[in-house]
Image 1: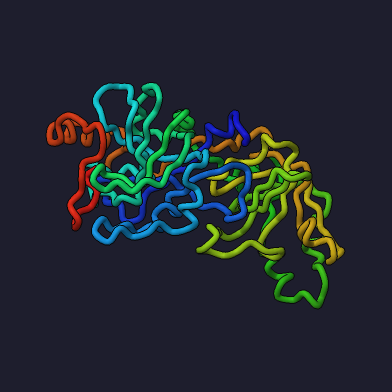
Image 2: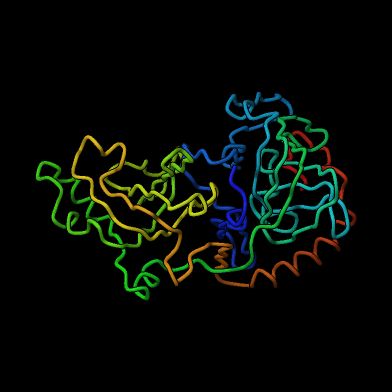
Length: 341
């Protein structure tokens, strides 16, 4: 499992349907189904268990298979006790908790217990590592829990780079996926001059990152379209560039949806080698654009209305006034009720 500066990178975005008065932010965990760089729990998977406390809906096999395994998950902390340090908290994908909008369902959070108290991060995503356990206890207010071993804040508020602008400042061309799409429409004519003319050039490639692998040689796909293993457009030779990172530090973490890379573009003319090299590949790829940055730490799409700091202060005072002391554990839920988190 890769560690280090990668763990300070995470992308968050405004939730769909957020109102102007409350800009909910969520972890954007779209990524390829074949990513293999670490065991990572996605809330999009955990939400697949439509648990009902009355009927005791069985847990789907793909989620049950993860129970008892060491895993990591990224989310926002919801405290279950007072103070600036917490031993118990709920980890949620979004900040839409006590004061605004619908309350989260059982399948939208993980109850976390830490061996030692950790710092409460109010509005910063945290990475939690530990043993994930499927343990439906609706009377205790959870169906998922984690025996945590580590919890750390992820990054600071730093904007992502604009690949087009960064490439221009660096005097480099940015790869246009349209050349591949045009080739797909007319494969019988062979690889176009528009593609072959790029062979050997230093270029910037940006897109959706999937199929990370630590196999030798290190490689990943940078695609024109998003794909989460279920929704979107699956990556293929005609919508993706196969990138071969210069080293493991250039591979973005599994939860990072998009990436910007710079390297030497290669065009594979031998169709028999496409599976290995792709039609277009980027060799000795490095993250970002040299001299222009590119490490995404925290991207916040606030939209209109209050700033995140302003809305958080309002939310904190409201919650303190209306909820009183935090619970040691999530409260028992009525059968027709959502989580009281």
